[in-house]
Length: 117
Length: 107
Image (tube, rainbow over all chains, first blue to last red; front, side, top):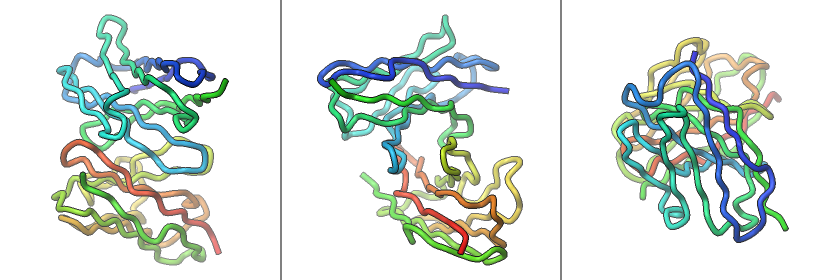
């Protein structure tokens, strides 16, 4: 069974860069036709799609975050990553990684990231 | 970009009631629409994809309908374990967008 696990710092300072990793087990990120996706959710609020990277390497990003976001694949480690630059308090949220073909059928447990000095 | 609007934003219903949640796209998206359930403090889970296809393991009291711009999630007989926030998501083309959510609780 596919499992995804987010990892990264729980606390980041304003203006710094957030780097999160999603490690995939139970399946290879190199095979199939899947979108490896990042979503976030501020406390008490709804889900926001950040972006995804397709198995072949094509990326798409939320237009509201596009200037600050990079998503990449590391096939040697079977994981994918999120980089988000120029952080502010509004980036504080639970960050989820997920996999799907459009719909998202497998999710990680989420990791809370707080942006604060 | 296409916007996804859910209604209502919240509802209270009795056990056994039929519950309907609507999701409207600002432009047509075919049937590229998914529904998720997020129980309090939990990870979202896929309920329905392609507008009406039930994900494996999801109880049959859940159903989806619609295409184009208007979609509906129906719970035929509300159960206590259905207390959750429900989200629609479009995936016809990027950017993928979620609705703002509908919180369902028991009256």
